[in-house]
Length: 145
Image (cartoon, rainbow, N blue to C red; front, side):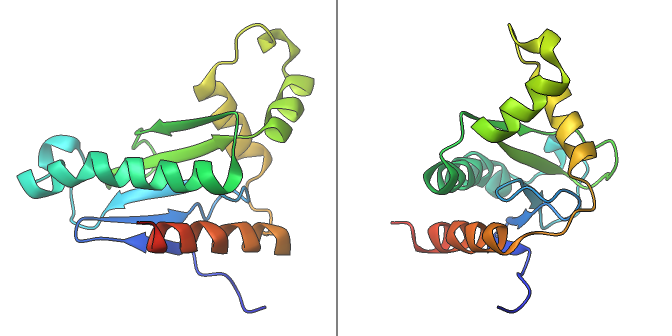
């Protein structure tokens, strides 16, 4: 199997890519294709397409991975370009997280979990299984009715 392409979907204003820094399949970054650092910098057409684009991406991740929850967040601390993190919290990730952070068993703090996952899985190579999941997400994004 040839190396996986990180770009999974693109429309006139946004691109969805597998996160390059974190080897968790389905952790996608949705970025504006036009240079802007915040929502206020989006034109009317891009702003109107943002919600439907995020719904489309989240729906594809949900269909392929079926996680317990999907986080969708915009931070912009590391990269100034407007982008959104679409992060699937699977049963396996949740179990591993709670083994390391048992104090959050009553109430998981999503931003803390996301930060933990980005550190724990940083720099790891995608497995062949992960590449297959990414390809299924790509197919779903580009072939959904």
